Image (tube, rainbow, N blue to C red; front, top):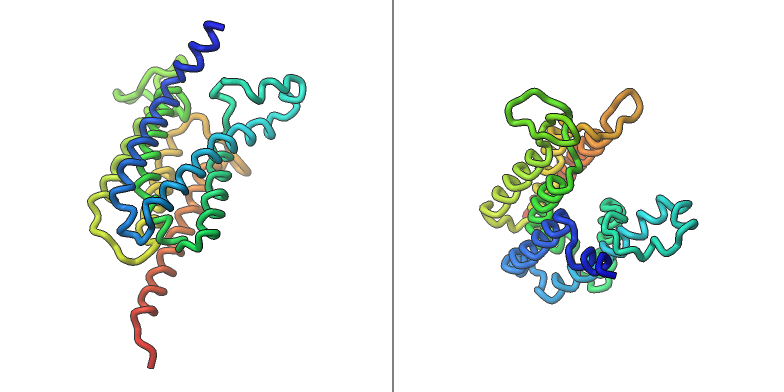
Length: 247
């Protein structure tokens, strides 16, 4: 019983860092949400429902991916073990729930996603720090002087690379002059994040390889970057056309 309460009230450091980033992100984005035409009430509801979906979705996704193990021990599904969690699945479920809310409230997708961009940027910083605390997303072995000792080897501090890249992205967006064109802020954030991941993944030591030794995460980042560039071009064209008066 003592161990149960110790685990319950003493979460791992990476969870504490992510929670801290979440709180900071919530406090910062509220200051700039209304400039995008979205009320604080709607933004708060989106983040609240999204957060609940993130927690539940992450657990369900992990269970479904490891269903045979949980069929043998069903009580493991409600375990307080915070490692029973799939971040990618959690993010997908949270996004779906958030978009359902946006559709039902008939909110503008681009205005809403812009209002949440600084929140996403802060979470990216917290994610890098959580990887460092947990020892995940580790780098390849290196002889460089700034390598860190992890998993019985000196490795590239890819978690630090990730954190610094996210911090730079956040700074650029925070001090960037407000752009009235909806969608540009978020797409800029997404492009910068994908570009940094394309670079960082080259130093990762735990990346999954596909086809002819192609880094899966780099391939995903490259596709995401291309989509961002195309979307930015389309948004620029649409904004220009909207400004041209009809003949």
